[in-house]
Length: 339
Ligand code: PEP
Ligand code: MN
Image 1 (cartoon, helix red, strand yellow):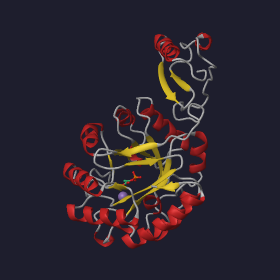
Image 2 (cartoon, helix red, strand yellow):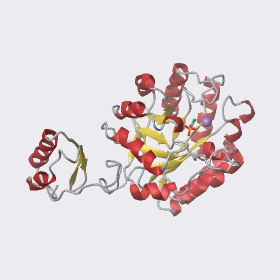
Image 3 (cartoon, protein in one colour):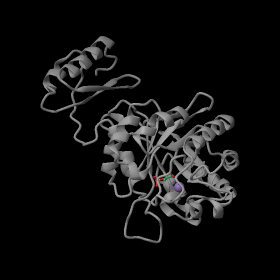
Image 4 (cartoon, protein in one colour):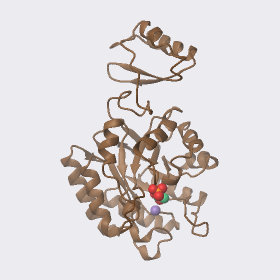
């Protein structure tokens, strides 16, 4: 729309888009509103839209993902996480954040102990799995609702928003009630019904890259969420399958500048699940921050040998505190502040 186009003109354009069978997505900037049109090219009459009052120009977006593209939304998206009894943590643009906690919630005492440690070191968002996607059906599957309740209480008490994985459309309502942010795991990146379902909620979504997904696939998955109206998506590079077998997965460091060029969405990295080994976590976390990530998500445990899940990759609290110092320094070098 033209700069300062009146509201009535914007409403008229939206009405015309809907009349032609399309959907309108408004992106309001300081001076200008951009209206994203999603629908069949054959039924949306571009010339007609261009002729409406207040329309500056109609620009076809050639990328297969539309709402997630930089063409639609030039400025970096900043996602607010939390609120209610916790502070709001901003992630995106100049705001970086560190999400930390156990892989999975094993019991109440361990959750609080780890949460206190990571908070003292500077983490601002707490992670912890209640529903775990395990390769074997005989492995620990998570404590479900009980874990969600402990996570909520712990987050509120320590003033940390919480993120936890949702694996199934049937869990969305429950997880939405407890969590500040949904995590969609790598194995569910193309669970399209699940993506649509979280897209209809008002909570932000942390979308992990699939084990064998291209950056384009990943952005199309984000598009499923965005197209349902939920604009708060944070991408997470967590490593992909390659022929290299010295690490658990290969963290694709290049995906960070690629995503940041193609999309306005924030992107963080997961050095825990990618390396699979605590010794290698700090180097990869530092590299990700230097490459332009908006933060990290890290697994921490005070007794990794006894962890029910992912012990070998869990950082000890003191190593995590050391890493926080490095991340903070690198964030400052690349023009970001760590929450
Ligand atoms: C996790 O974060 O606990 C997890 C299972 O991650 P991913 O989906 O990336 O494997
Ligand atoms: Mn894990």
